[in-house]
Figure 1 (cartoon, helix red, strand yellow):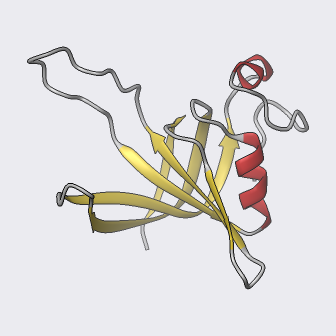
Figure 2 (cartoon, one colour):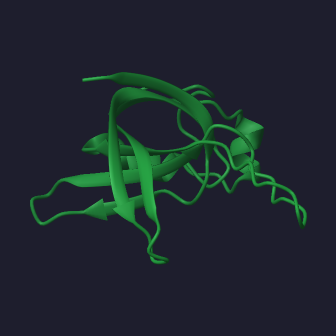
Length: 126
């Protein structure tokens, strides 16, 4: 199984799901560079997107601490997944499962993004 380390910004709000079994998962979409909407006629250069999937007790911590725009680093198992989007286009995404996360935002950046829990240090790792 391949392992990967990525660092970037959370692209959309984390999604926390609970299951009947009592387990939970948090899914993040992380982009490795800033997306800039192209001007008319310019090529699109959106960066690389990665889905990060966190399970168990750390799922709730990640959902509480991270927001769209939060900076995070993740190291974990890499799995390619293919799907067809609503427009019928085939897409391929690299999913990082069972990651070790490091929160990279400073206290000021966390507050500017709307907070989350203030417990912990500026670079929490789990």
